[in-house]
Amino acid sequence: MSHLYVDSSNSPPAFPHVAPIGTILIQPSAPLPTSAAPFTDAQVDEYREQDRWLPIANVSRIMKNSLPGGAKVSKEAKECVQESVSEFISFITSEAADKCMHEKRKTINGEDILSSMPILGFDNYAKVMKLYLAKFRE
Image 1 (cartoon, rainbow, N blue to C red):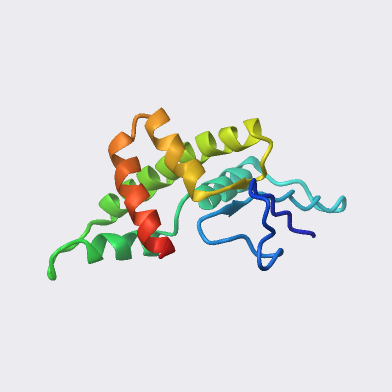
Image 2 (image 1 turned 45 degrees about the vertical axis):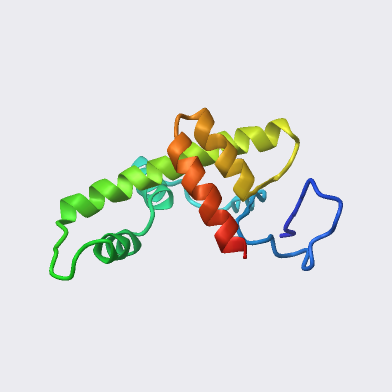
């Protein structure tokens, strides 16, 4: 499968097969084999759930690193944050993808994510993330 990298700038990327850090590469899905047995509704639902959510271990680690030494986090709290942060990412990314589609671009970059935040009412996050992205790129 070939990877597509489309950037609005005139300069080609240093490595055409690798998108720069802070971008999301949109590529066509591989066609399903015709001989594959159909999936059950339960299998499809399970796949979608796993595909949409961040890994619970990563969420748990981030939560624990944000708390004092002896603090514990319940399974229910981890799952709640996992679902919430995954939904937040999907929400912001969907808005950024709409912007890219409107501009006929195939790669979502950091600026697209940042510009989608105020549109969705996350002005405070956008300000902080803009500083973080600039620091990250240094």
